[in-house]
Amino acid sequence: MLVMTIPLESLKPSMIYDKITFPIFTLHTDEIMFVDGILWIENQVLDDTNVKEKTLGLRRLKSPMKSIYPLKSMITDVRSYLQHQGKFYIDTKGRFFRKIKTVKAKLKYHKIIKIEKKDTASVLWVKDCNYPFTLERPLAPSEAWVGLLYRGNMPWLVYDTSEDKKKDTWRKI
Image 1 (cartoon, rainbow, N blue to C red):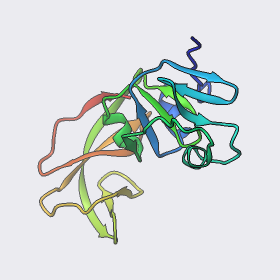
Image 2: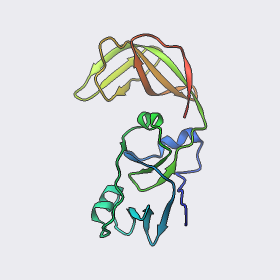
Image 3: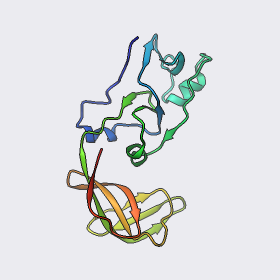
């Protein structure tokens, strides 16, 4: 059996998040085979690269193969990916990868200064940061603090929100 892992790039582990093409889908095993342009998992087709389409979903829809592996869980952003408990994933371009958390990232809490409510999101302006962050949900009026993950010394993404300031800590990413 051929087990295939396609590395996204030879980057620092914390930079791999810039190369993932969302949405991604969780898989429960890394025992996959690539034979004649078809990515197999448990004797079912995961991806058919013989179909000339740009995304995994379109290739799966247009594949003449009948036994298509069901993708049950979809992740749409980096924050959800970091908090997900799975280990094996495939992105929308058909790249299989394994989550290995190797880098520590600071998690610091900042006071929310201003909230701009949009149709499907909230734009947060926070203290000690020159640019806003987008939260893809409305923010409860009682939530006054935002936990930001840092990559290097720069705020990177919204990890969580809270009513009270929490202790600054770290997360493995």
